[in-house]
Length: 246
Image: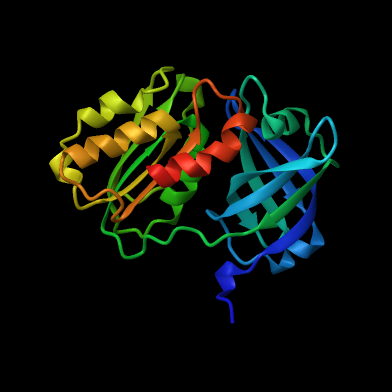
C-alpha cells in the first residue's frame, strides 16, 4: 500500500485569482472540486501542463505555495522572465477562468529531524525556499542566503526565529557565491545543505563544500533550476542529467 504522501492525482483546475507579488513574481490561484482529495498544504512539487504553439503540451515542476482546503484553492508562484518559457508565457497572460492541468503532489521534503539548515536560493527558487522555511520546526537554527536582482523583489517570509535570513541584492547570476564565501564553511559542515539556483552556481556551491571536506551528497539537496545561455525548453531535459552529476 502506498504512503498517503506518495499518492498522485490529476486535477483540471481553473484560475480564480491573480496576484502580482513583486515586479517579477506572480501568484496564480486555482481551484476545482476535485482538490478535496489534495492531501498536503504547502511545499510539495506538482507538475503543471502547458499547451505548445505547434500542438501538444509540455510539463514543468512547480512548488505548492499554499493550499486552502476550506476554499479548495491552491497557490502557485511564477517567475516572469524573458525570454518567456511555456510556464512564464502562460502566467504572464493568464486570466480568471483559464484552465491549468495539474498532476501531483509529490511528498514534500521533511526536515523535522534536522537541527541546523543552510539554505541558498536565487529568485527562480524563491517560492520553493519560502515554502521550505515555512515548514521548518520552530526550533530549527541556521542561515538563509536569498539572492534577488533588485530590492523590490524582496518578500516577507515566515521562518523559525533561529533562522537568520540574509538578502543578497545583486543582479549577477552568481551573486550567492561571494555571500557564501563570507560564511565560515566549517560552521556549516554538519548542517543540512539546501541550494537551488542557476546550474553553474549550484555546481560551484557543491565544489565549495567538497573543498572544505563535506561529503558530496550526505544531508544535501542541490537543484539547478535553470542554466545561463539555454532557453527553458533546452535545459528542461538536460537538467536531470546535470543534477545527477552534481
